[in-house]
Image 1: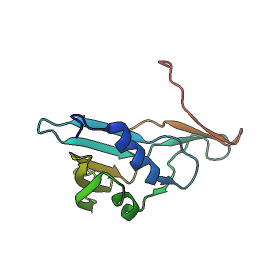
Image 2: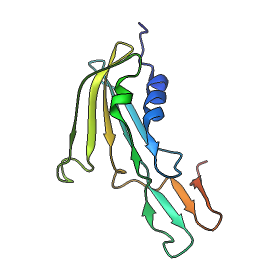
Image 3: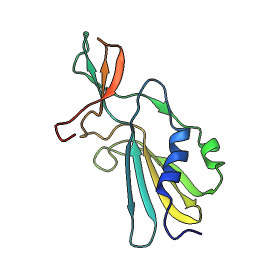
Length: 141
């Protein structure tokens, strides 16, 4: 067993099962190793901003699906617990699916937000003029 959590390998298998229903190239990903050694991972779809047409400036997001049975069958992934929750925005800002288990024998918790996090900026532009979806460039890039 490796001494470190294979974050790239884990993200690769999760993304393989994350199926967007329209063009979107990004998703929010956050990973932190807790003091007890558990890798805590959170992911969510991202906001997109419409450019052009009657919906110009509107924030949207690409819907997605994931077949958990196929994800759970991945080699090196052992799921010990999973569930979902949807409380009020004060407690859980978006509905989530929570998964606990081990990846390559390392413990993890994965929180999959079913909607973008409420106060995040759009990451992509859906350009109806050029008929393309692209990342929003910031002045820091």
